[in-house]
Length: 295
Ligand code: CA
Image (tube, rainbow, N blue to C red; front, side):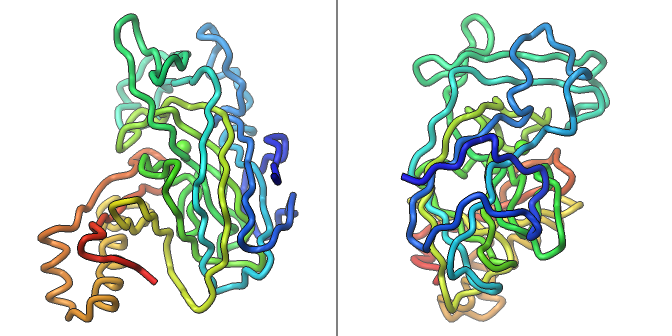
């Protein structure tokens, strides 16, 4: 199977990035990834300020998918996720929802044992391995891997797990898929800026969808579709995600704007992915019992 080593790390998603590997649509590829600190933290005694901040938020890639053209959709099915043996968390003064109240930086190492991240003595966190950063080259020249936007990027969405499928707009030939920033677990919001940050390996199947077009990433789970949007203001992110879903509901179910809105108001879920990155990310979920397919 094709595999991209984690040493092929990028720090910006950009159409200028040179592809590491080129594959046809329909190929399965494994991406080995660093954690968000590029595996720099190995001890709780380390000073967070002493890290090399130029190499945080690496993403592995990019992968060039043959046949992907501007205006297509790239389908990425997450087949498998493997995570390393320990994760790391941090609190950093000024960073995160409560960052203005953090006076002392702190680093915490969490061993992963039998499906739990060991937090503190008898406090064990059930793991939910998820991908923080995944996306394609953006429409603009380059966007740091720590920032989410229409191309995906640092969406920090805890629903992006093995078994789910992402759909991205293609903004450049080959799409240029890259990913990193795994979390063994993360709560909605990621309020202190870190989930249980961890390295590992993600195996995905990539497929180019022709004759389809989307503006923002979409996530499909066994039970739901989620439109995903990022914006400087959280309420605006929620509104964009909602409008995207409204558009699908109107088109696929043949409803008027008002009726689609009432349906989403009755059974759709406006949810927070994260509130701590340079743009904030919301998702809008709708059950597949209502909307059976998007395309
Ligand atoms: Ca992240």
